[in-house]
Structure formats: C-alpha cells, structure tokens
Length: 332
Image (cartoon, rainbow, N blue to C red; front, side, top):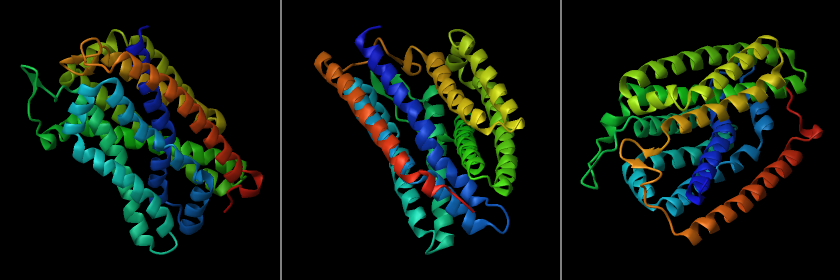
C-alpha cells in the first residue's frame, strides 16, 4: 500500500468514526422530537444527561476532514468545496444550532424543537452529498468542471434516498445508545418506549436501504457494479451483522445490539468505499490520477493525524469518565 492510499484510508476511517459518534449526537434530535407521552421534559433531560458534552467533541472530526482532503487531494478539495459550498455551510450552521438547541431547552421549547429539525437537516445533507458524488453528477470536459445545477442534482431519487437513509441510520444508532443508558438506569418504562422506537427505526432504515439498492442499480452504475464485484464480500458480512443486530434487539440484548450497530455502520461505509474504488469523484477522478499533495506534506499529515486522533479519543474517554460517572447516571 503506497502512501497516498494509506492517507486515503485514514480519511475514510475518520469519516466512519464521525458518522458513528457525531452522527449519533445529531440523530438524538429525532427522539427529542418524539418523546413518550407525558414524559417530554424529563425524557429530553434524560437524553442530555446520557450524551453529555462528550458527543459534541466528535464534531472536531468534521473539521479535520476537509483539512485532510485539502492536503492530500488539493484538486479534489477544490472541486468539492466549489460544488458543495452552500450545503457545507448549512451543515456547519446546523451543528452550531444543535448546541444552541440544548441551551434553549429550558427557555423556549418551540424554538428548541425547531433547531432540532436543523440537526436532522445536517444528516440529510451529508447523505445527499454522498449520493450526488456517487451518481456521477460532477462532470469534467477537457479538464474543466462542467457547471453543476446543485438543486437538480439534489432532487435525483438516489441522492434523496441516501439523505433519508443517513438520517434513519444515525437515529437508530442514537436510539440503541439510549436503550443501553435506560437499561443501566433500570428504567423499564423508558426501555419499553425506546424499544418500540428502535424497531420502527430498523424497519425504516431497512426499507430505505433496499430502495437505495434498487435505485443504485438503475441510476448509479459505477457504484452498483462495484457493490456486486469488489464489494460483494462486504455486502454479505454487512447483511449478516445487520440481521444479528436485529435479532439481538428482539432478544432484548441491548448492549450487544448497540455494539453490533457500531460495527454495522463501519461495515456499511467500508462497503461503500470499496464499491466506489478506485473513484474519488465518479466518473472521471480516480485515486491514481488525482492530483496529490507533496510527499513531505503527506507524511506530516499522516503522523499529525494519528497523534491528533489519539489525543482526541483520550479526551473523549476522559470526558466520558467525568460526565457519565455513576453519580451522573441518567434518571427519569
């Protein structure tokens, strides 16, 4: 494995970690919007105590990703930052508004609820960006970027379904995490409410995944052929872990279901990456033919990224110890 491929894998790994951690934090908004009857305020307080400020630290990874892409693939960065400038700004604004929503909970419930919807918009935009890239909407002619009608690209069925899929996936992650916290708090009422919500999230996520596969076969040939060729093994493994996770949920083994969901999310993104290989931006820009940063810059990026990620994970672990100690177990 040469250096640029190693850096590419590192960037993809960071994206996976962000979807698991940051995606779960944003996905909590779904369950804040639909609390159990007669338990709205206490239920939202339970969520805030469960996630604490630890999850928000994971959004540093989202800042790292464009920075790392700029150093590793400056041309790819320039293309994506040009095409997706407005969606990227909206995502960053949504993350900031997510924090404001937590502050406004005790001040203005209606405004706080509106800002939670913005959190889900951030997840939807992340999914649609992936769908637009994979569907080959970014075209070059004679090494020049063809102007992209972003609105038309975003309303193609595959991109819309991928946006909804990311929302459903992250909401399911969040629900399983809350189930584990409710089980630790021995709150049977909340466990029953969250279990029914998690089953609904499983059904919605499964349907959107199947619809996405059907649309990929019809409208995204590069991704589809990759899925059934170099990605076929990961498809089988991903399906196995998904069924195992669902079975664990039915068995009320919530810790196991949560852990399997983490593995499932990682496998889904690995499958997507393997299926799209060697393309960075289909159908024209591949890993081998993309403009890459200087060798010394790639070395510095690799070493600095590893050190930074270790420090970040240690910080998250430390914060988890502080904010999720036994003395701060969520209760209703």
